[in-house]
Image (cartoon, rainbow over all chains, first blue to last red; front, side, top):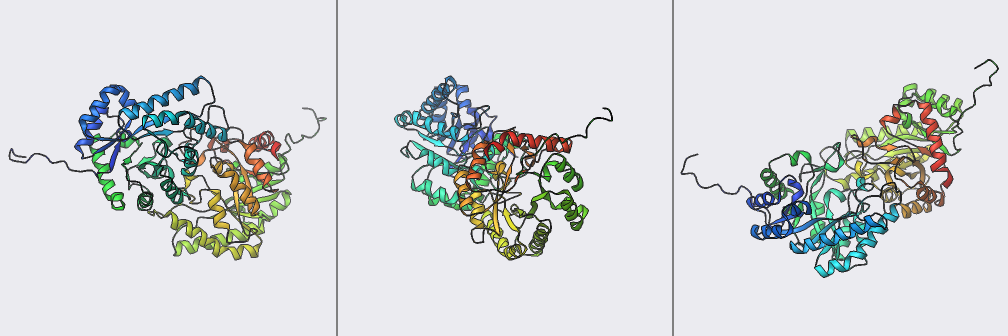
Length: 290
Length: 290
């Protein structure tokens, strides 16, 4: 390189609807996550509560404003399947704080992971009912804050220890008693791709105006030893992003689309390289269907 | 012990509807599996094709007759998601042989595991259609042999590499074009416990007279490194056997109930001890609901 070489140009300009979910570059603190996203040409980012808390909410709000990025969602609330008692009260209070943080950050939606079966319990039906009850407790606060609670159905392999909401259909049933601007659902390809009912349920979610977030990443087997880290870059697995993306588009969703990957190898890579790779695989596998 | 001690008495008498699926004592050859089952007081066993083939079908038929045991099912056919061509023809032929073996062994049903996505394919809808097509090719042969093809929905975590039939509802949809005595479904607690639709779909399966087999084992987390070996003894996990068993009973199923466990620790145990343990946990967790 000589001194006459031009200044480096960003190698990727991310799709205008693509949002980098911060969990994809898990080890980057908030400032780095914002910088990496801006440098890679993103206009949106999905934040997590823990890295926001590291800098403090007020500072996080400033940093986000300075970055010029939209916040597509905040992860995450939920974990409210425990029976009535001090733990449940603490979980509800924590969710109220999470709603307030979502509003402060200007994110439209708070992603909710329902929680698994309580220790020693086999009462799946009861646990699902307690998710319904928690939404009832939180909906007024969310409505007042202008935040949409976004129920994320998780893959059934997480039903016992992470989320008793296992299908988009169940998430929509749980959301049904509430106004769509207050309680919606997340469509995450990793969690729903296998579901024989996924296409009609995406259409239903659209008709009910409840798609709060569309998240994309890929499924591949064999599963890793830790099944929680089984998410892959778009295009590295078996998910048909054409079919699912076209269904979400047909359902009327026009918001940001997050790429959220939990994967040790991805987490071990340079965050800037990951952001660039995410943008290019999105451009190849998702953007053509928007 | 003196010479005056009485002959040993079997320590367990298994429930009359309990069947030991041979995969639970995977390393026991057929003769030992039969002996162990008889000694533990079983009156039924679920067989696999491979150990039958080891002794030869004719000899296996004799051994089973000598044992006095019923054969509750034969595992397994299926694996017919590949596109048309030599591999698919071979799979269909293999299934015809499996049907004949099922009839020869006097088992009412051949358990079908659909197969995963073909290598390099993302066409889940097409793979499911090929399962439907294969049933169409095999149904006449099955009807003639008096064998019920039993579609087993597998847990969605196996959708890509093992079985594209992920819910009881889909299995029933695939079975719908055929007579119920020719094409039925397996209800396996491990695979379906998480499904928000499992109770109405069990009721539907009963109304359509399609429950070919009820199989029980338990789900526990964390999953092992090999997710295929995640099955546990009844009672060692989170499944509510009361709810599911009562639903199967209410659906009118009166056949044998298999315990099928894929688990390295169980496979490493003495087969006689496993058979005894299976009988006692069944007596505790399943039998009270029959």
